[in-house]
Length: 159
Image 1 (tube, rainbow, N blue to C red):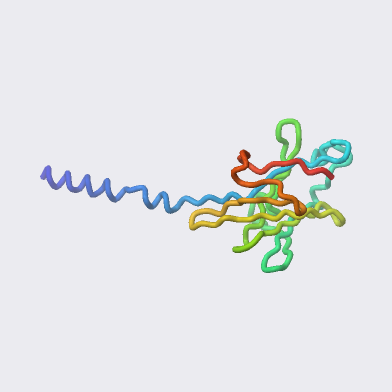
Image 2 (cartoon, rainbow, N blue to C red):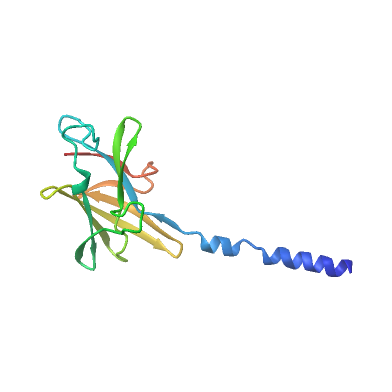
């Protein structure tokens, strides 16, 4: 009886291995955040600033299969894949970048209003268990690279 109990316990221990848990983990890292200042160094994401950007006008456009598509997912907490929040004494915008393209640079356009658009390009590294941004360009200028002593991509955008 003791031997049967020992065999049962050993079998149960092997059946509860961690290999399935490791296979289920997935890392999605395709976001960036920045503050937006005007030429007078005023925070134009701050809703108390009389010259602030109107959040209702801000849109993200992803280039998918060569075509621009406005981002709107009504089932998400942030249906337009961005959010503006207060960080210490400034406001920031956090954006989820386009990661739908499987090769080359993925492109995200930030349309601030009818006449002001910025372009963000990102190189993505894909594995079976992850989608990670490796390099980010803003309006053609590289602004971030994985491993350059920064943890999360953050920068200041001047308008």
